[in-house]
Length: 248
Image (cartoon, rainbow, N blue to C red; front, side, top):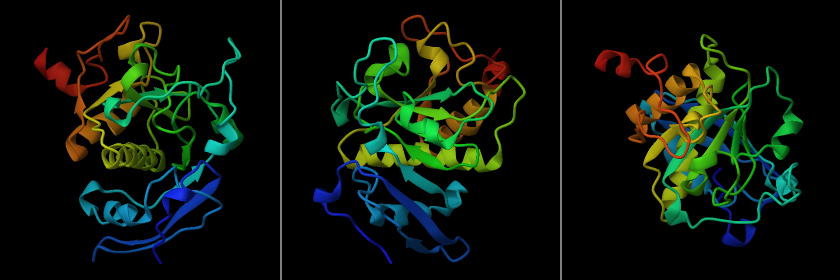
């Protein structure tokens, strides 16, 4: 059964979406929606069917949990200001910035308090935290035109990205790309947090860069710009990106 929410239902309310079955061999997909409110602030179920049919992406079903209602009144600890006090136009959104939470284990209740648009849990579950057009103080110099994804965990130089979490991260990238496109924007670039902040040299680390950014460039055509920086940012290192080592 495919359900397509009407625009009046697209207000941020709690909801859970489960992709029930995916038969990639025949590219036949059945999608079951279990909803407690709006569906991801407007992402249509019919579009999800198209996503799941893209077998070449190598993705398998994930759960998406919408916590936008819980996060609606979240405030910054240092200033007390609401996180959702300013917004961008869809046409202004051009990129995605990848982050790591920097904590070994993240509880599920923590996502509604995160300063990110989307979170990816250890098991690959996607948490939709804030509307994509919200301008959050998440990515420093990259704030104005990118969407922030937080990946749960503490990643060092050799920490692997579990397969389930890589799948969730890739879905998050894909869903952001599609929702922005449906609203007149275009996600063209994908960055690491370090590229917009000199004090974030480990954001997001090698495994997340390779499992998310390099995959997005190969499969979705979202460009990496490893030498690009903004503000005090630093370029992506050759230790993260094997293509840079080849050039060197």
